[in-house]
Image 1 (cartoon, rainbow, N blue to C red):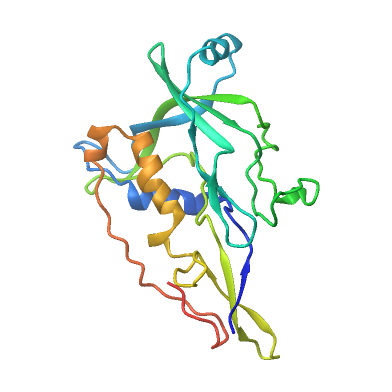
Image 2 (image 1 turned 120 degrees about the vertical axis):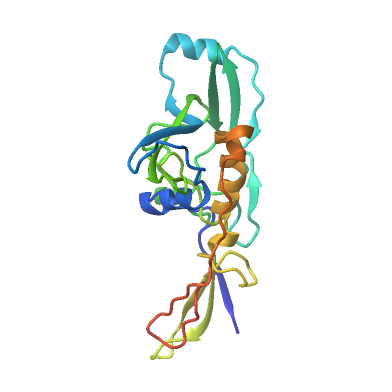
Length: 253
């Protein structure tokens, strides 16, 4: 019988290489004449530098804002993961510049063990937001600035963002399904899945939460209509497989 254990919900991708390689895959841009490998080009914009000037902060905070939920996932650890409204943003055009306000009522967790969550239980489950000086119930402002890209292939318009500008979950849910035994007869977790039924492997990028975020939230935030028309469509080849040492392990796409 399969044993399903819900482990981590909404865990954060914070490593650099996977984050930038996803941008390579989805956001190559049509080549412009005269560019060479290694050139830097500006394409799109995204909230980057935090505003610290007190006078500007006072002016921004005095403006009417339309708060929108990030819909970050949370749950009780029993498969009841749902998007919640504990973190919101508001975009504002002010004096010719564009800004984004961000506020949250609680830190985003690396994992949800039970609900309600007692922060005194395990501080290791809290994300790095507090380590970097961001605290609940405050409003933080960031200015939209041009995104800078390195030209990797000027003929194909293949660009790589100079900075890792965001971190998102590869999957908003993770299920560990145990249905095999090792050489000693002990049951162990065979596979990690995005869905409770075990039909979508956690590392299946074609169905990942990260891809949804890139193709929706990031795509429409960072690029205007003209820029979106110049972003090439890429096909996902998800056929590569791997296998662990024991024959009992399943293949992973």
